[in-house]
Amino acid sequence: MKKLAIILAALFFCLDASAKEAAVTYSPVVGKTYPTKLLWGDTHLHTNNSADSFTFANKSLTAEDAYKFARGEEVNSQFGLPAKLRVPLDFLVVADHAEFLGIFSLLDAEAPEFLRTKLGKYWHENIKAGRWNIVLKDFVRALRGEEWDFEVDKEIAVSVWNEVARVADQYNEPGRFTTFSGFEWSSMPDGNNLHRVVMFKDSAEMVTQVLPFSAIDSSDPEDLWQYLQDYENTSGGEALAIPHNPNVSNGLMFSSKKMDGNKLDSVYASLRSRWEPILEVTQTKGDSEAHPFLSPNDEFADYETWDSVNIDGSTVKENWMLKYEYARSALKMGLEYQNSLKANPFEFGMIGSTDSHTSLATAEEDNWYGKFPLERPGPDRATGKNPPFYDYWRLGAAGYAAVWAHENSRESIFAAMKRKEVYASTGPRIVLRMFAGWGFLPDDVYAHDYVDIGYSQGVSMGSKLDEIQSPNGVPRFMVTAVKDPNGANLDRIQIIKGWLDGDGVAQEKIYNIAVSDQKRINKENGEVQPVGNTVIVSEASYSNKIGAAQLIAYWRDPDFLKDSGAFYYVRVLEIPTPRWTAYDAKKFTQDLPDEIQTWQQERAYSSPIWYKP
Image (tube, rainbow, N blue to C red; front, side, top):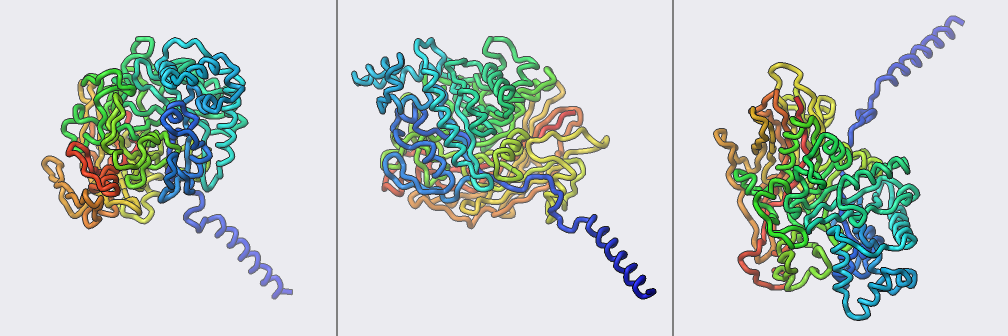
């Protein structure tokens, strides 16, 4: 009996010890709440449902084709060329123009339900008379907010939108490939770009409780924000808007005045920050991160620059407009508004997307099918012209949106965008992490668990840095960047800082914080020797014998002012690589004029981290 008691006591002791051990988690990944998945996508793709895409030859590639291509399947382009991504995307927003959504294809097919309407009869008569240009001009008039005599029949609009949402749901596969219902609100007053992509988090059942909001409804973004609020109130869902292509707005995208002519106020600032948490900073119609006129000391500011006219080519660009068209400048103005209004209208994260009108979401230089199908690969593509808009060679094969998410799902990706834990790439899938905090040590960024340290002791991109924790505190940053596995080595990591000086005027400075090939950063002026250039244009080739596969940086702000608001974002530069124009020249045995750019340094931009005293 005594022996049994001893055995039972030992057993209970072991069970108790096991329970205590179970209370202490052994697995290091249990309980982690930060995002670990890097997902790549395009939030701005057009199919044959867009009036301009259809008019410029995309007659047959639908949203279904777009989803298939984005998830890695082979699709034939509009002119029969087989197309396939080297690596599939993780998510896609088909964002066709809300203005006459799906209507041009109904008109071309002579759909009876459309031809019976007043608009259908009017357009059909013009088509029979060979006047497609009249129909296209009507589309442009709608974008410009001009007076309009016709309306799309509501039953037809509902039918088209229901099908858009249904197809998005059909191709949504949580964990593998995520789709979002969306559209483009294409406001273009006086030919100046105010376009936004509207993106819904929700299923077709909720999304179809409303119809897309178009420039015919209103050209004022404040009315768009009210539409988004009404949608959330009605459906219980969530939506956001993504401004894009500010570089062709001729000073309107980040204007100091509202559409009614009044100055920006705190209500406007709060609403814009609420509904537009991220900005499309790079795409096929140029890069909008910085401009050499605004940042003359930035040797990399003149990248894929579009600075001649507005989006429809009707008005020439003037230098005063540039301040209100570029992301870095807007971020600086945001600091000034925060100081004066106590609210920041331009507190946005940054992404890239394609704005392709081919249904093919590709941003690869050697696998690019143009903005419109008419700009397809061919011997004359680089030297072609689309007057008065652009020379074809000025188009860029860009860009993509990178998202740090918990999982590949609508809820997780949408949440990442709202908290701005996203970044932009001009195309390469560079892996980028950025953290800021007050107590990071120089060795922390080299630790195997530096991501744990970053989240537990600081904040990630898109966040706000808490107030200074000690009188002599200085913000410290950990940044890591890894090359695209299928792409070029990296040249350097830079931090771009904006802050308010003693007069409340925003300033900027660029810091090189990590460089490749054992180059040294000049301690006096911060400059770095160029990485070199291995591009052989005639062969459309380059070598990764220069640059680095990975760059790591720990950096303390040497110019920190504890009483001054500031933002910090990261720019990662690749080594020089061939541009799509070089790949075309080689493939089609073509000599290009000297003015045509044939190589570039592609890049990624993180969302900022803000410091607010």
